[in-house]
Length: 289
Length: 271
Image (cartoon, rainbow over the protein chains, first blue to last red):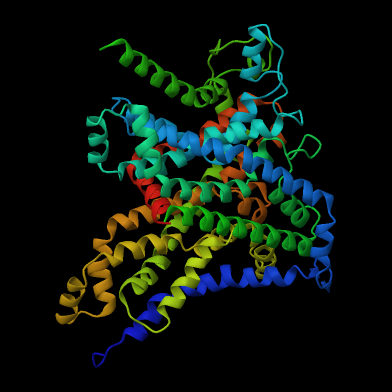
């Protein structure tokens, strides 16, 4: 220890401003939200203590289960496709093509738009009567499809808009992963007579595995948190068939003002996301090492 | 050039065009009159291109105000994030103080918290402060997010201690060393943090939707999302609004393209 060392004082001084904000707007609401979840809590009127009643009610709430199921559907519809798309785009963006830079930029551009712009745009493209997809289908003699207004199609339509909007994000992660593979590995494989497809299967895919794990974990979390696309494109309809969990949490809290119940659901979602992340991390990470 | 190469280029060009098509369609629709848009006799390009929808959007909606709100929120968030994050990132990287590691892990655990867990308590909290429905209510929760600290700390750790020690020997204090040596050396990490926090604030949706209910004070994302509710079938107008909302983002992207992509790659890989 140097005499006159002020590390302790400096450490506290430099940390303090952020820690105050962090305590106020992260730690406090996190604890307060958990506390609220044990109450019947409306904006007006006095909160009354319920114990774990909110959690018990949620377990018997059909709307909660259907919203959770829709969310899981969305996760399953988007995650594998987005991982594969991101990887294929990254292959193009790291290829020898003179267009690789253009492709990287173009594939990434939708992600830079705010999600509500992307969703509004796709709601128009998929509009039943005048949207361009159905107009073209009709020009070719087919019949227009109810992209957003049929229970069968709506979630797929939202997924398609999501592919366009966010695949570029995964591409960026994969591009960085592929660039980290040393050139010699590819060169020696080429010398040994491996063709492009063999190089991708036997070198690129195994060596970008850490990126795949990362993409998978981030993508599952992001898809579980889906809300905006649904809010803009279908509003949860038709007949509640695309209502996702965050939307139900939002409506319960801010349309019906059942704050306690809403908070309890958000904690359940938190636990689900944490559990899935940890399981993915352990199972995928283990096999890797 | 052999046939195979031509085929490959053609395929790539097709992909590029497909990917850009929705954007082009947004612009094309916005240049048509409403009557041309809502008709079954389909036209691809506008028969009489018009800027009417843009004028209409500016005069009959608050879109200009929403852009200003989003800009104000994003700029304040970006500056405040850096002012809060840089010192603590430096402390985590270079200052040996008791409790540092525990504090670091607590802050990093904050990255795991999904935002929707905070919406109800934050709303009640802000309601009791009386700041619901103000722009500051949209800004404050963003400042508690630790991603910037993570990026900056990573960078500051790579700065050799010898540089700092030389400054200490010359009699410079902590603050001076931080301001004169660490901050200038960490410029590239700082730009990354600033750009990412700007984009995240600009694209924020769920929280501004809840925190702000006065349509004049909407952010652009919330304003656009509610367009369909208020302007129903005026698709040309809605697309003009979408174009207006996208321009600042696209300009920002074209200026900082490399920085944005590298920033995402870095936070993704190292996060």
